[in-house]
Image (cartoon, rainbow, N blue to C red; front, side, top):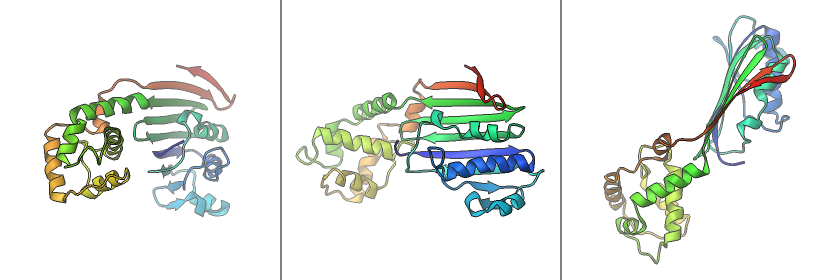
Length: 258
């Protein structure tokens, strides 16, 4: 469980009945009846948009037709609770409910230090599932080591006009870790606003008397160190786990794994 940001996108083709069966599965997940609760699913055809939870059975049947492709999407985050994507059976359940339908679907995203994806294609009553998970703790620890070597403790104190009495080395590590999390998706480590920096220090009870102009001067000097943001750094790291499964939606069994 933890903080996260995940996006779900599904594209469905099939008869009206196929689509209704799949949407009934999505309603169960939306209601939290499957062990994990998805937020509001948004439906879209070429002519209409609606939230799944806003439509009763009659309205939903009117919304869906045989010919149009149906798109479904939802977003979790930036904060919430999640299970490992490998433990979520939503696409398998969809395929069992309408094995003759066609759909392409994916959940992608992750936490500050992880990337995960769960992708699936249902075609000819066979569901192909591809899962991917990229390293978590090792990656974050490597990045923390990288940024603290590029901007060591004493240099940090000097740049931000702090004393060791106000910020000891253990708190410095915690502060750097928080900054790394805050700017993970940015191009550089200190790609953050002055107020956010001050709030980060205050969260650790560090009082700082630093004008915004002095903060910007310090950031300019840090930028010359060319400290990459976490995402860019992670792209250069190796690792990760990927698995492909084939599921027979009629037999309700996995028939291949690699």
